[in-house]
Image 1 (cartoon, one colour):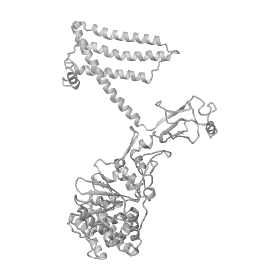
Image 2 (image 1 turned 60 degrees about the vertical axis):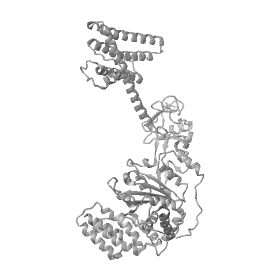
Image 3 (image 1 turned 135 degrees about the vertical axis):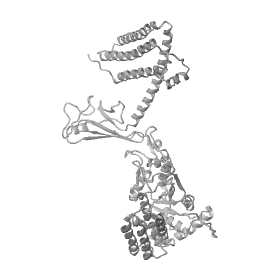
Length: 627
C-alpha cells in the first residue's frame, strides 16, 4: 500500500530539516576553536551576551551533535509515515499508533545519544560532559532562531493571505466555499427551478447529476460557447455581494466583494457628517444688493484694515474673475507675497472658511489626499481633505475653498490627476472613486457606489513657490487652471473708509457673474475674438503654440467680469496670454526665437496699442533677457 503524506506532514518534515540546518550552522558559529567561523560572528556574540559558556568542540563533540541532529530529522520523517499508515487503515487504531510512535521515539533517542556517547570514548570520559554542554547550547540557540524565523515567515504568509481579494470556489454539499477551506460569503441556495432551467439550457447538465443542492458531489456544468452567471447577494451588516460564474470548462469562479462592516465603522467621519446635516443646507436665494465693483472695493479695504494685507485692485480683480473662469486657481510667486493669505482672508471676508491642505513631498497619488481602504482594519482611512469635500456636498450654497498649499512641492499631475480629469466632465458627472462598493451597500448619504461627488461650490486654489525645491507645473495643469502671479511686496495704503464684511453665497456670486456675462456691452464678442485671433495666429505660426477651446471659454467667462469690476477686456487677455500661453516658451531656445518675440510685441502694439498687455510685455522682456 502506497502511503501518501498530507500537506501538514510534509510541512513538519520541512520544518525539521530547517531546524537541523539552523542548528548545524549555529554549532559552527559557537565552536570556540573557530576553525571555520570568526570569533566575532553574530551568533557567538549572542551566545556570549546571554551568558552561555565558551566551549571548544572536538571530534567526539561533533559526532554527538551530528547524530542528534540527523536523528531529529529521521524521527519526524518516520513519525509522519507511521501516522500516514494508520490514517490509511480502515479503522484508525490509536493504541497501535501510540505504541509504534513510542518505539520510534525510543529507537531514535537510543541510536542518536547512544552512538554519540559511544564515540566519545576515544577522547576520554571527561569529554562527555563537555560534548553534552556544547549540544545543549546548539539545541537551545537553534530553537530560539528557529522560532524567530518561523514567526517571521508566518506573519508574511498571513499578510499575503489577507491581501488576497479573490479566490476560486467550489460548490460542495450545496455550499459555496473557497479553496482554502474558509466559508465564503453567503450560500449558493439555488432553487429547483433554477437548476432545471440550466439543465434545459444549450449544452445541458449531465443526467447523472441531480438538481443543485441535492447531491454531495461537485457539480460539473458543460455550457457551449457561453457561461452561466450566478449572483448571490446578502444584505447582512450593511450589505455584501458575491458574484459567481460558470465557465465552459465546468470551473466555477467567484469574485467576492470584501465583507464590509456597517457604514458607521467603514466611514466613521463621513457618517458623523451625515448625522450632523439631516438635509442639504440650501440658503434662500436673494438677489445681491451690491455689485461686483462694490464687492471688490470692500474686499480691498477689509484686507488692509483688518489683516494689513495690501493688494492692488488688479490682483484682487484677477482672483475674483478667476472664480468665474475655472475651479482650479494657481497663485504663483516668491515666498511672502501673500499667496496663502489671499484665499484665507477672502473666505473670512465672505463669512466662510478656507481649508488648507499642506502638500507633502511624498504625495504621489489620489490616496494621499482622499485616504484609502485598510484591508486589515476593514476601515477606510478618511482624511480631513476627504471630510471637507464631503461636507461641501451638504453646504452647496457656501463657497468651499480648498487650498493646496505649496502644491508643486510634489508633482501635481500625479496626486491630482483624477481631479484634473473629472473637472472636464459635466457638473452632475464629476465623481471620484474612493473604493468599489456594492450597489445595495448602505453607505454615507452622498457617497454613491463608493464615488465622491465634486460639488460646484468647491474651488481648488494652489499656491506655488518658484525655487529649486519645487517641480515645474506642467502644461496639463496650467491649461485647466487660471494662473495669477504675485510679483513682489505691496506698499502700505491708508484707507479712510471702514470695511464691511459682505456675506455672499455661491448662488449669489454665480448670479453676479452671469449678470455680467449676459450684458452685451461686456461680452467677449465676435469683434474681440477676431482681434485676439490675430495674436493667436501669430503664436501658432511663429512658436507653434496652439490654443484650444478650453482657454477661449475661460476668456469668454472672465472678460465680462473684468469689465464689471472696472477694468478692460484686454486686461483679461493679458493675464491669459502672459501666465498661460507665453510660459510655454520658458524651456525653448529655438533659433529665431528672439526675432519672433519682438515681432509678437509689435503685433500687440499694432492691434491693442503701445500701453496694452503690460504683463505679456514684461514676460516677453524676461524671455529676451534669457536669450
